[in-house]
Picture: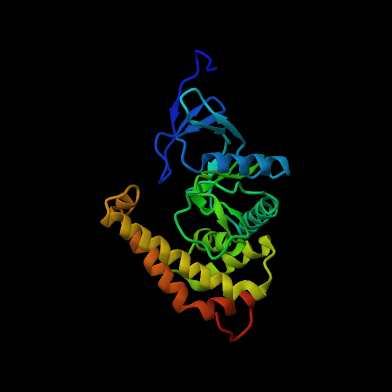
Length: 261
């Protein structure tokens, strides 16, 4: 039941969900084909003690998703972040993957991932990025789980490795590599997986660029809007940068000379 004094407050900042509102200590957003499976995942994560995801409360009388409202500020646009903060993000992602590993996904789940992953070993968030991390005084929480779907740890981690340091078409590779290493150290990724991770970073960035371009050609939202805003001019050059500098990036990450990415 809604109390008479409660008013809905529109929430902005996302790229894909429409009509997202805050109502009291909850968030209401449209249902997708993936909602039953996603809510099952969120309930499982809560049951195994993972606190880096919002609680899922089912549907309201209007048929909208009801999720926990998490107070805090987005990492994106917030205060400057340290390597210690990046390590905390890496540890949060590791805890997520450890919790998700025991989730038994429904056989007929209608997942809504926008890319084809490199395998199916656990259910991933698929958009672990600064625009989806709320940094609160008590908890850091990843939000916007609508694109959660089966994937792999490296597939999920590759996206975070691009977006959190962050990589850019023109960046100081040494600075970005140091930030990425802090994230990976927090995750606890063994250095022998760095080459495979870098290859997945290239693929993920290229697929995102292709998705935006193709969506614009087909006049599908939000991809047409993202194209008009020039997002493909970021993802395409970033994929080229990581591909071109892959061997050097791996050398910087490991602190060793040579080696193929």
